[in-house]
Image (cartoon, rainbow, N blue to C red; front, top):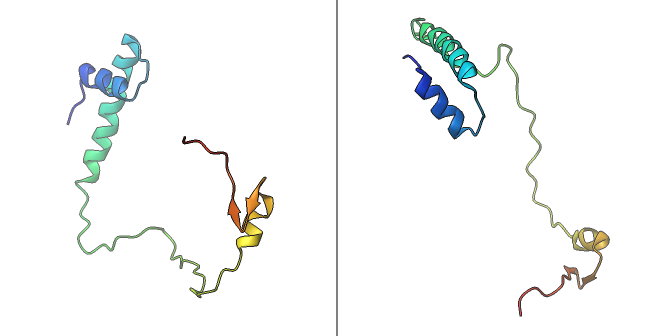
Length: 95
């Protein structure tokens, strides 16, 4: 795959990045170089290689999933400017 000047300008416009003519020409070469490296990765034989998320085995820390009653309504509205019966009171916005 090859990137031309028009593609660089189009991508820059879509990303809302201001790019001068000289910058676009320089980016064309840089992007083609990057895509060349990506194409080289497709040549690597990965048959039998397990997918991994890290180079070292890491187990996720998980909390115990315990159902509790909550009972935190008073704590939640404690910092509210105005509250009534554990509900936030806000100014009326719809007539």
